[in-house]
Each structure stands twice: as structure tokens, then as C-alpha cells.
Length: 497
Image: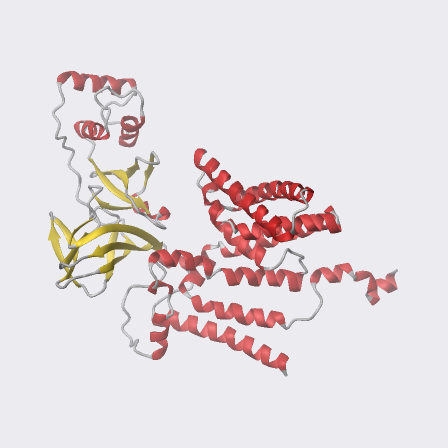
């Protein structure tokens, strides 16, 4: 009876998850393929402040109109503030105003939902320098162009790169402003803007400078920080000045942060009625209701059940022997942030050094809990040193090591060392090999764009994962590896022998 109830409950969970996903797709015009939403982003600006005893006003400047995006929708949130839209300093703003005293912590949020629009007409920048160059400076600039083979009509990108990166520029071009004026003098239609790269916008607390060129025949963006050229759609520009991002009165201790995430919902309003309880529930049960910063975290967490299900299948059906179930699953999420090959290399390095430390601690005859604490401390310090090395070598993947589950790594070192001592190196290496293979298989599944999109846009699919896990728990048959392991005991093999 219990077995039948478990099977029924698992089937109900699977059907319920599929039904909710289909309803969400029909009600909100969502597809089950990620390509339909590749070029949509959601950017959220959060401003935190301390209120006082006077009326408060916060005017947030809207993003620059030179972006390669069109804003589809805007939403705002604040505590007891009236909201309006005006213009300040020749820029459009969003104003939060409160007449009475606003004491305590205040938080303001502005969300922009955007879509890439490369056909958007952007006003051409006029090449005009406010500085008047002397005749000697002009001749020195011409000599520099002649040395670097940049004559009139040559590639604009190469010219911009030489002006900003070459060590042989004229002596009067020592500052960025002077170089910008020199490019304008040479007829380059560019301007300095501040913004951030969308692919690196998990949490932005300061803007980076970009040089944008918009002429009648070309558009591109140059990153001063990375010294590379980027397409317009890879960068979100906020304004031509680094500060201020907002104007405030009656508020103190202001701080801000920005986050961006690919948008997984359709923003076009549907003609049919959405007032049913199913649509109300699906609107409430949506990842987009959270702040953009938290969406980044839950986009990863929503994949953890699927990763655990894959490990459970490999253990219970295929016959893999691993160091636990959650260790390979969590490790696959860590590999998602660092990259497969870099993550496996660093994991191997941590294991080798950890085993050496384990042998040293065994010589000291330490108790179990203090020994685990010492191992954990050494693993954290090792990850910190490797992150510093990655920063020095300009390797961003190595700086993501803080996402590695250090407790899991410490337990791997301990269990691997124990298995080497008690069962021998062959058994310990076999278990470690299967653990790494299970992690890699899980990593390959949860890093596909289709999987990431499905579990972000349809979080109810985890009900299907729950149902499959329950059905998998009722499987008591042979494992695949056991069929090979005990094949000599089968009647067919016995007859042949």
C-alpha cells in the first residue's frame, strides 16, 4: 500500500509540474525554447538612504538614450513615496517625494525591462574639440600618425586604440581628456560615457568608462578598463558623467547598486483574461518577483534539485559509487561558476595539498573535529591564495573560487584520505573518479542554455524533479554495473562456462 501511494504521489507531482508549466506558457506567452528571449534584459537600480526629520526627495537619472536597447517597461518601489517623472539638468528623471518626515532606513528601487534594438536610430555624435591645438601640437600629432601608419581615411578603431594605448603618443596627450580632445580634432565622432557590461552585472557599485563612437557609417564601444572593443549591445550606458547618478534632499548616507539579468518572460500584454486563480498564482510564483540580485542566486539554486536527481540516478540505477549525493551535485554548481577544466584542475590541486596536510595532521595525532577544523582552515587559505594568484594573472575564472563549497571540499579531503588508508589506493581513486564523473555529467546538463532557461522561467518544473525522485526511490531492481559484476552467476553464463 505504501509503495502504491508513493508511486501515485510521484506521478501526481510530475503531472502537476507539467500542467503548471503549460499553463504558464499559454497565459504569459512563454515559449519552451530560450532563443526567443536571448536579447531581453532586466536592470534594477537600488538606492539605500537614511531618512531624517524633513521632507525627502530623490531624483534618479534615467539611462542614456545612446544604448542599443529600447525600454519596454519600468516599475518602481518605495515605502510611502509618491512617484513622478520630470526633467532635471536636461535629463529625464524619476522622482520619489514624501512630504512628511522619513526616518530610518529608506530603500528605492527602479527596474527597467529592455529589449535589444540594433535598428534604433541614435543621434550621431559631432566631432568637436573644445580645445584649440597649437600648430606645433598639430604637427607633432601628424608625426605620430605617420609613425603609426594612420593616415587620413584609415581604420577608426585602430586609430582609437593607438591614441589610448600607445606609449609613443605626443607628450601633451598625458591625460584621458587630452586624448579625447585629440580624437575629436582628428575627426573621430566619439564621446565618453559611463556604464557597465551586461554579462558582468551581477552586482555593480561603480561605473566603468567607455568611449562610444557613433557616426554615419560605424558604431562601436571601447572599454578603457579592458582595453578591448565591444558591440553596443554588450554594454549598458547610464550617462556621460560618472556622478551623480541621482539628486537627493532630506536624505543622508546614500548608496546604490545595480544588477542585470537576462529576462525570461514575455512583456507583451495578452488579450485574454488573466484574473483566474491559476494565473494569479503563477504571477506570484515567479522568479521575476524577486530583486535582480536575488534572481542571480535562485537561478543557481533552482538547478540544485536537478543536479541531485542526476547523481541519484547515477548511483541507484547505473551503480556509481560516489562520496555522498550532495557532494557531486554541489561541486557541479561550483564548476558552473569557474568553468569545467579550470575547476577540475583547481579541485585536483586542493585535493593533493589537502591529502598532504591530512598526513601531517595524522602525525600530530589530532582528534576528529579539530582535525576537520584545521583542514577547513587550510582549504580556505588555499582558495584565497589561488584567487589572489588568479587576480595577478588576470584570470577571472580563478577569482570565482570563493563559490567553491569549502566545507564539502574539506569533507572530500577527509573521506578520500580515510578511504586510501582503510581500503587502499585503488578503491579510493575509483570512488573519487566516479565522484568527478558524476559531477561532470551533472555540470554538462545544468549548464546547457535550455536547462537554465526552463528552470528559471518555469520554476514549477522542480515538482517534476520531486516526482521523479520519489519514483526513483521506489526502484529496488539491479543496478547496471551489478549486471556486469555478477554476470558469471547468471544461468546463461553458467551454461557457457
